Picture 1 (cartoon, rainbow, N blue to C red):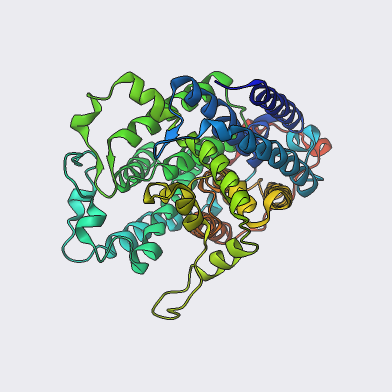
Picture 2 (picture 1 turned 60 degrees about the horizontal axis):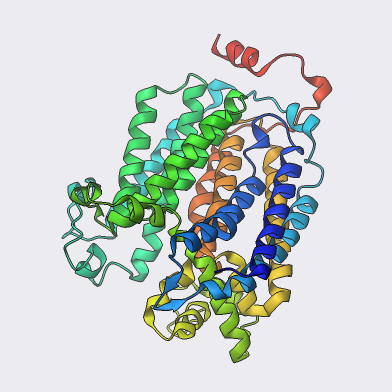
Length: 467
């Protein structure tokens, strides 16, 4: 049972989150109030560090590798409070100059339909598929991969294990990320559809194909990024602030879907359709909050590195810089020690994979202890604040809205993965197509309009374009 200290720390964290969320909502107007990277990061703090761990402790699901991790919640909560405070400060400084309700209310969308080269962006869907399927070799059947419900949980291996030399190889690591190109493609197509430049069936077809590929791969994060990106593009292009009821319904539906996928997926083969009906409600509930169990894992690892006197210093940075280098080019390349330390802390290989999913500031604690949590979180906050501010000035154009929306969605991956080397890899594959989208716009991206210059509504502008 949690003691008084644990409850006090949780209450302090809940109060800080409420204050940060309230302040952030008052800094912007319109759809920008909900779709910004700080809001996504705050939502991640709520789920991964407060609501999720609390739910797991109530459900009695705080045991990992036969060790009770609930007793290490205090360290994890303290680090969360420090990370939240410094990240919020860093974000405000990075986004300074764009945090104004009047400013965001004055942004109006005026992309010219005849300049929308969205057909070129649609080619990213085909490029992503071509690169991805190219890595599997002649023995892989594409039609099998396009069936996301063809997995069999009773089979001992996965596609990766059965193909051995392909899954997990350097070629796989490079080409697998190419399916993230499809996120930008779908976002551009949705924006073009809202401007009357794309058929609804193109939107449905591209989105369905993307979801099929993501479901079959077994990696749920891309689905979340896709959902956030499409909702953001739709709201920013139409200029309408989404209903809280709709956002809540989408969030709950996503939680249920992610939990269901987690129980029935086989990496590389999709979902075992026969197992869906057999999932018990109690298991589904635990699975919905299961990702937040890494909060307790982080608490135990923090205890371990202090006991062992471990500090990896700049290890995460060196590991991230060396990761893209192929072994065939540099066989002695540097590997980050973060995951090995996590596995060693438990004394089993079962904890190894969790190193890819601890909250991002957990890796900073391993590197520089409390200084790492504070300075690292401040830097992350400044980075996302500066990114929001920069892309906000280009949001009068469709390609700018797409880049902004994908950047906001990327903040979710950054928080969840907690492994700098892999996070940077996601950044390249998720954001590079958005930068390309800006370039393909072939038009000068307008600065943010001043509130006093607004004389026509967003709807009137779009109607004028259609004429």
